[in-house]
Every structure is written in structure tokens, then in C-alpha cells.
Image 1 (cartoon, rainbow, N blue to C red):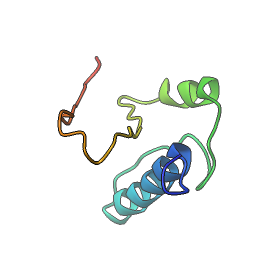
Image 2: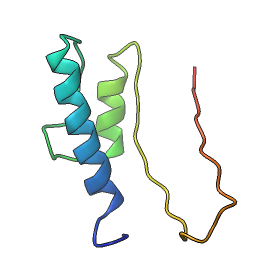
Image 3: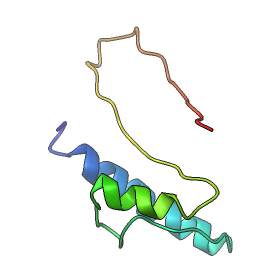
Length: 77
């Protein structure tokens, strides 16, 4: 928790906002739950198994004074 917000709340909000943008562009996609709903991982994995591509969102926290952190990006096959 940081600034009164939990990771799950932040990523759910981001997921739901992204879903709205994808829908507006006519891009078909699935969500691992209703807007604002955080399914257990085992259920989310079952949804992802039906898709060609699955994307998960997570946040990390660090002290504002920590300048050693570098952005990361991972792509799993």
C-alpha cells in the first residue's frame, strides 16, 4: 500500500481504463473479471489460456530517493 492505494486497486483501474480504450478502437479482448473485480490467479489463468496473448499488470514500489531502479519489460513466450 502506498498513499492509501493498494496494487490491486491501481492495476484494476488501469486494466479497466485500457479495456475501454481497446473497445473504443474495436479491438476484441477478454478480461479476467468484471470491471473492478480481481479474480483469483487460478481463475485468471483459465481465462488467459483461451487467448493468443495474455498481459498482466503489476506495480512496484520504491523510495522516491532510490535512483537505482530501472524500468523493466518482460515478454514471455
